[in-house]
Image (cartoon, rainbow, N blue to C red; front, side):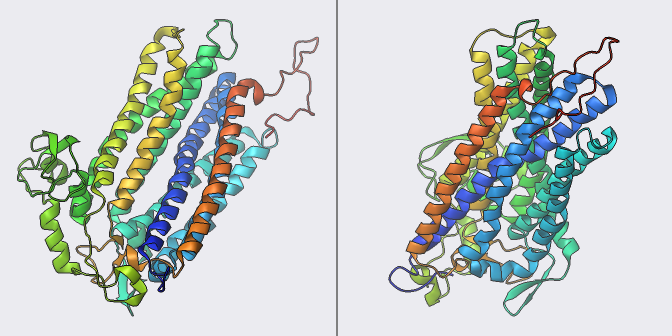
Length: 508
């Protein structure tokens, strides 16, 4: 909760706490999708090597596997701060949701992360020590565990978006069904969408790096050219399929949001007034910050929003202004007159999220996702029938393209989290009464100085970690295949490979 006093209770504490959680969460989520997508693709590359014996797939496994490990390590370090946040700046929130959050977070830590770390260790140190198929099974166990980890985290996050499986006892939700929490329809819609986004990130990363190396090694005699070409085409196809999956799963998520969080979706469209049928806004000109949208002109597709909301081109979609009245009637017009709310005590509740963030965040998510898939499609066309463009824009396009799905993923999460304001736990329209919480009620009793100190400290540490990650990634990307493959074993006089027990085949 917000504190009291000259600096305690200032709305600045709430804003600073939100900035701190937003910075750490978005930063951490830069690593997460790359780890999820790349782990599965590396396991697939190793499977191809075990099945075919083609050394090209072994090179792909080792090169992309090394980059995966660097990213995974940074993801672990940055992820640790996330759970500390609940006790640092959001202790009131932790007390409110603790009975529900404990189960999925424990499952993520004790089950998914334990399997992840165990089998990743076996995979790293098991080369030439474990049988090939056992070693391959370790790769798949690790990669599937990363998705299980995402599942449990998303189940917890989805409960905040749509509380289920609880009773309301003594002013707090008490879980009555872990099954209901884990099979929340909001979670079941979010998981495939998030996994598809992860594959989009990993695909763009592979395409960008492969385009750069392929351009550098465009000489027909280069021994590694086929490996880079295979990587590029694999990444391109995965990116295209991932974008198609994002569109399908995003449509499912959108329909649920229109039911569960209508204000979020009205804000995403800058739909200030109810329309029947409702048009989908492609682009807005003017200031979308005001809930009446009187000065905003949009380019629209007629009736499309009605279809996206209800699978019906003639249905009604409620706008921001009428939804404000509905929220006020159900959840009140003013915050409780509680001294611990400080400056917000007794003040009117603003049920409208930041409209520019939700409107443009939604379009950035879709737009940059489409650009990423487009670069993959272009890469396939430019490298057809063995061709490799010689112009410098070819590798530059690939490297720029790496950023596009990262931006799309981040914009999507910012839209998801900011679009539910002013709630930190959004009320379930068909759920148990009382199971919701305003963000202003969730903050720890801290001074602005304390929050500033933690915000600056964490941001500086994350900045250093960012430099380290970029340095290591750049180093190993530039090192290419030569940096991860052992030297070729010398041939004996009879033409067989000499024994080489001293060389580590997969040294990290």
